[in-house]
Image (cartoon, rainbow over all chains, first blue to last red; front, side, top):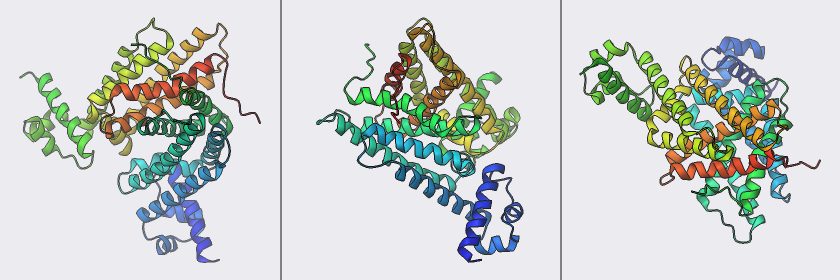
Length: 205
Length: 205
C-alpha cells in the first residue's frame, strides 16, 4: 500500500477518534487500532499526537472551505449563490460530523496552536461570505449603500449563525442539510434582501 | 471589609486576569496582586484556580442572562422586544469584555467542567430567544405556521449570530453596542418578519 494511501487511512481514523472522543481522551493506541496499523507506524508517519491533530484540522478545514467554494456557482443570482453555498456547507458538515466536531469543538477547545488553525479557516470563510454580500449589494444597487463595516458585521452574523446551526443540525435527529440551509436562508436572505433594497428595520427612536 | 465585598473584588480581578491572559496563563499570584490581597487569602476564599474559574463563569453567565432578560420588556411588540434584548446583550458584552472573553473564549476552550457551565447558560438564552420567536409568530398569525423545529433552528441561528457579532464588535475599534444590535436586527428581523408573515424565501427547485 503506498504511503500516501496509508497516511490518509490513519488520518481518517484520527478524525473519527478525535471527533468522537475528544482530543484529550483520544489515544494513539485507539487511532492505530481504528486504522488497522501498529502504533509505531502512526508515530513514524505522523510524529506526535499534537502533529497528528494539527494535520487533521488542516485537512478538514481545507475540505470544508473547498466544499463551500465549489458549492457557490459564479454567475448565479446572489440569493441562489448563497443558497448553493449554504447547501454545500451543511451537506459537508452533515456528511463529515467527526470532521466538523474536530473543527468546531475540539480544535477551539484545546488552546494554541490549534485554535489559530481554525481561526485562519474561519477568516477564509468570512472573506468568502463578505464577497458574496458585496456582490449581492452590487446586484441590487448601482451605488451600494452598505459600508464595509456593515458588510463585515453581516458576514460575521451569517458565519456565526451557520456554525451554530451546523452543530444543532448534527445533534438533532432528522434535521437534514437542506432543512438547515433553508432555515438559514429564511433567517438571513429574506433579511438581507430587504436590506439590500434599502428597507432596513428602523428602531424609530 | 466584609468577606462578601472582598470576595467580589477577588472575582473582579480574576475575571480581568482570565479574560485578558487566558485561563492557562493566568496565575493566582497575578490575580492576588490585581485584587490587592495576598495569595493565601485568595486560596482561603476560593480554594483553587479551577474553583475560582468556575465561580467566575457562573457569576458572568448569571449577569449576562439577567441583563438580557431585564432588557426585553414584556408588552412590547416582538420586534421592539428583540431590539431591546439585543441592545441589552451587546451593551453588556461591550461593557464587560473580560467577562465575555471568559464565557465565550476561555470557558469553552478548556474542557469540562467549564464547557458544561457555559452550555447551560447558552441553553437558557436559546430558550429565552425561542420564547420571543414563538411570541412573534403568535403576534403575526392566529394560527402559527412555524413548527417547533423551525423555531429551534431560528433561535440557534440568532444566538450563533449574536455570539459571533459580540466577539467581532469587541475586537473591532469603534463598533458600538447599538451598531452591533442594529446589524443583527437588519440581518435577523427583516428576515424573521417576512417569515412570520408567510413570505419565506423559496428555493424554486
